[in-house]
Image (cartoon, rainbow, N blue to C red; front, side, top):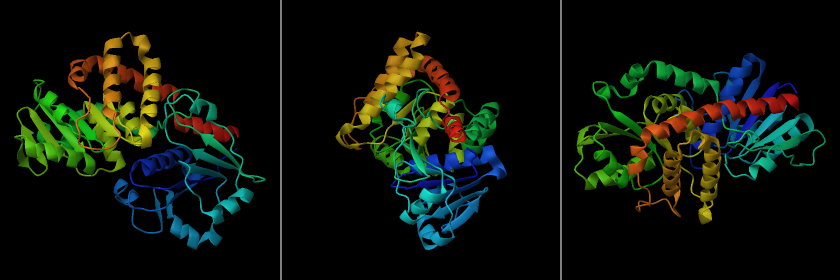
Length: 388
């Protein structure tokens, strides 16, 4: 089926992950089809979108780089003037305005429920399963992102891959762009973007590793977590939002646009990230990572972590690096073993992770190549629509 027009619906709750995924999907489809497709993104609010793109405004309707961004409120007020697209993406099971959906049942062809990313094996059975909606023309299917070939995969967008290559080939330029005060020394650099967490064990390991370390802290929750530790230790504020103690420099980074964040995580040595979209970006850098998964009731998030670990090991066990693989996955599990987001000390021990850093780097590079080759969500989604 030809994709003449694409409408994407997103209901933002309390973080940047949902809009981050939707924003990326919209941009990638636009880059594939250029002027041959009309793309509209419908949002319940704009609070999280505005920081992601500095050209975005707090208005009901706007067009940026050929993509229309429309609030649900604007859609409701002007529903009589809207015709639904022939392909609709419902991100993460969000609610679509009833007036729009009633029109779509008669006028549109395909509705895709793009679900949250998961490594659990059950999603393989649900992926591309039809969900009856009682419409004569419109049909709805589940699209389940995951880490195996027979799932929906993850968003591997060419815009990101091109940006990654550009940073790799011009690292000094991007160090100067984001970290000009580090350009005169050789630093071991990592990023932290997390929910609330006690990072004292991490700082203690970095203070003893004999390297010039720099830790870039992003996001309010991460920064608030680190600030409490800085007040207890002998860190000295050397400039605005920059602190030093011994061989460790900590920098609080300003909020970055999506494209800027992608440049930053490709220029550093390792990334500790949170959520879904940032996690996939971290995987695609090929650099060592930790993933702070979104907390769920009754620790249901641990099933997702264990599912990812199983998929991760399935791919990497052939490299005969069992010790570093077990060290990384154990730390990943301990990093997330919690029933609340708090500043209590967890079980994680970072010492072995950094001792085996070079071999872990081999694993993460190999995994990024696997994801890029076998689990490209954009390609899978596009092929499914075209074959429909």
